[in-house]
Image (cartoon, rainbow, N blue to C red; front, top):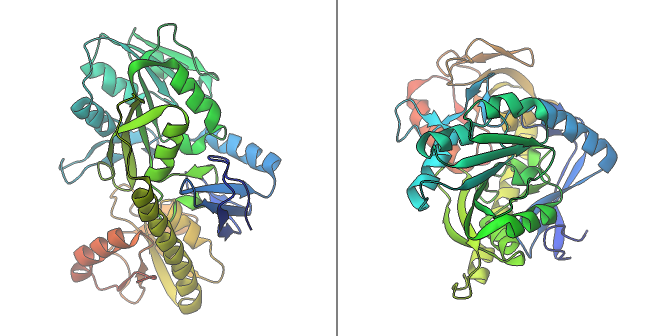
Length: 381
């Protein structure tokens, strides 16, 4: 079935995956059917909910409870363990990219859209204390935390604050997926960014992650092509893009389009991302089918406790004995009445299912299999 893509208004769309249920970003089950569509024109995924009214109510409830980049309370997710022995807070690492590749002056004006508790603003003001920073989000519950960062930080809730002279930087991290009216957002950015300003965007990369579509409150999942096409529509141009600064994510520097900008290779880029999404579709379907066909009667363990593992744990007729995780803070905790064990603690006769994108699953298996007695299984391999 073909419907109009809400991002590029093309009818070159088709049903990608139909889900009987989803999970929220916090991995809680959402008992609501969803159809996920693929647009061949802008190479993005978008959701159609069975009931928009019911979906908006659920999404509002999820957003009111969520905390960006956080796990286990007030501890921010850490990344880049390959560069830092104990990792680095995700917002700090995202800022590190901006600081490394954007030429920023000693003073200026920045707007962080969807700032939550202000982790990125805090990282930014530590290095650039003379900048005037504004954070905005949908709730006033972040106001005291954000404005407590510095006397140069202001918080605005429930609106996008315009700038009289334009912003030098507009930043947005893992917010784009959650915005239903993308046109309004990009029009605001185009109108309120200085001519030489920078739009700094961090979002998930659907081409590298076959499980993003499981998250109920993400209206869209983007590829590099998706972002390029969006930018073109609103007079913006990608200056630099990284697909491996943070695993499975896009880190992008965007500026207003100049007349001398060279065109990017649209056809080649589009084809590459389409192939990746089609491979992800096959991988996802094969993973589900393999689990339901081969593990109906055998007790299994699921590696990880994030949204993907939780979604698979809700598949009917599976005998989930326990979860497995390497995070020491989670070991011996309970998730959905099931114990979380370390790989070494897992019983030898209970296989551990790796519900990860294939390259990540293979690395985990290669690293852990020689150390444990349990068999590590990649269902779609």
